[in-house]
Image (cartoon, rainbow over all chains, first blue to last red; front, side):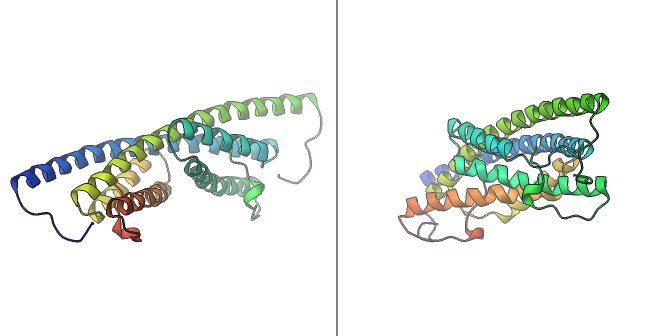
Length: 127
Length: 127
């Protein structure tokens, strides 16, 4: 990437390159393991929010809960800081997940009411 | 949410509502636990991709690896299906993470080369 030229060929360089490639494979193995864990945790999280959506639709509970959402964001930012993860990214991540939950809850609410309503962002809960 | 009216007051309704609220708190506890786990795994994943970025910049390894990315997406979609998570969401999730990794790797590459280059989406690796 630096200057667009390959490093000069040589034993020392080859050994260093080989070690770098091995290290890369090692790190990619960890990334793959972490991704598998992330996907399974996300699957479990959506099972929970699915139940929350059904519960709220059935019991006429208020769909939106801004206080809950604010608490979740503040907590995740705090956890991220402790884990040396960019807190802004943690917040973006939660908002990304919320977007998907919103889509799910809207589908549940539409099924429960039999309406083709289009609740906006604040009309649905994030669990 | 159904008709905009509250359910009729009564003991049976109150008990059902109280049970629903308790169930909601229970599910939210699980969601909070899963979110904490997700944040910590994400922190660990970024530690790995940070190392990948440094390694590639140092060893002049090709920054982009479309084959690796295609393998990652196919694998995550497969894992998502097994876990009953929408595979399309799993792919969206990986792309969301990649966006952040790209931002990090760009910063690393700029530091290594001392340039103010602006590598595009395909000029950086996702680890």
